[in-house]
Length: 607
Image 1 (cartoon, rainbow, N blue to C red):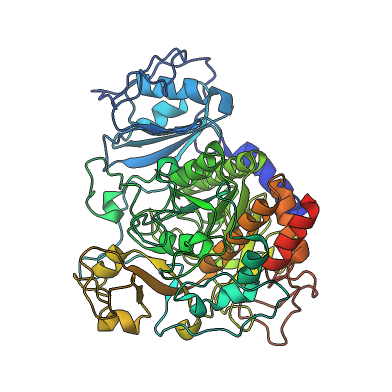
Image 2 (image 1 turned 120 degrees about the horizontal axis):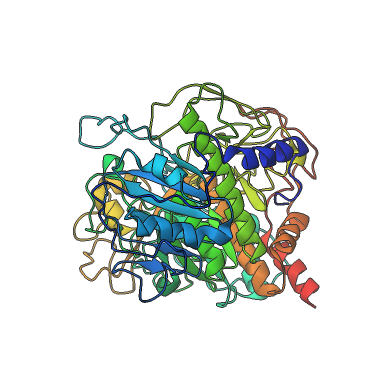
């Protein structure tokens, strides 16, 4: 399980590339210190000493609008229209000094991450890269956007034409799955829509809860996603808002005009609904309303890394992973890949520009540093395998990247040099998707090299057709209203009903009544590996609740050892042939996650 035994060829190649990649496309200074400065410098709200002796996160130095964890500090944005640059610090221990030098020179720094050696800057100054590359301690500077790129084309309605979402909405109401037999005691009291949750039955979640409880409130799962709607009645008492953070700064060229002066949305919001759906599968409350999550007794932390348009850029993603460790999170769910590259390749794929290659090298290096740091500080990392119907062991051609910053083109992907991140990163439990029949979902990524550790488990994500077998979970009312699926008085519209939207209200509010007090919860069916991964994250939370002393590697091993093994099907997926045997193969990894068996094993191990 995890990435501790990733394929030897890729491990060696990528580790070498990580060390060499930091010098691609940049100038290194032979001097111990180079004085830098912008013409017509404009302070970013901070004037730190360039000596490196002051801390940009000291209480006296923090400008208004700054937020911080022990390793990550974010600063107010002064140039929202600028390019976002990522600065790699060779030695993370020197990050503070490098940040002080940039801040002291008036550079518009927007975040500093001392755990991994990363500084992010958003600026319109075309000379920034040249100046930053000369700062002592900086080993690389790169951006994910070609300055000549003007943003995606509009589709005629004023909306941007963006890549398809990683999840597919249902078009009909979900229906119950057959109950799973169990020797466990009577199942806990169900919420009104729990009979629609075939995925919970498939992984034995009700049986695990009956045997060992709903999870410990001292266990925390980070939802690293598009945000979480903390006003949703199934999540309002579950999400720890005080520990939650939003690391995303809107990019006007793709997100539209900033809704907030700061270009940072409130941490309580989820514009797309994706993160709220994920959160509900993990830990929706057992409260007599809507649905119940896999681990309804644990706490959630919202660490937003996804933009309004569903893009997960490098700096916010790395900051969110690091913050999970800073905030003592036990499990982190990551249902995305780091944009704009479906596969980040060491040195770039053939035909990529030097600037694109440099950004991919930084992505591999910084995501790798962040994952290793979080794992070492006790975070069990879970990620979706991907919905590209691709083979991580033999990716072939990628025609979707970059999906931001330049025009997408056909790229030849070499598995020895390229990774889909964070899924293929070290220490990550990668999850494929199955339907109610336990068959691999048509869209799910696989691996032709099951020994590589790039696909570990399978979990319910729903079939490509969605419909009655989509995964039902929590969804923000605001997003549904914006889409015309819920009206201004809180009723599900005809269009919403056709899309599988459900409403669950407290006693006293009828099915056709208005909801002026916003007491009702809303639920949407989606399919995708994004929906599979949180089933595993919830199971991991139950395992840790049963034995809090388990390390991330031990949690992964418990989940793997107790998974319901599954042999390769007679008919292969369009993604490629199924390689391996019943105990380990490229479609299901070690098998379908089994929450009941995993919790039982953890309890026995704890004594």
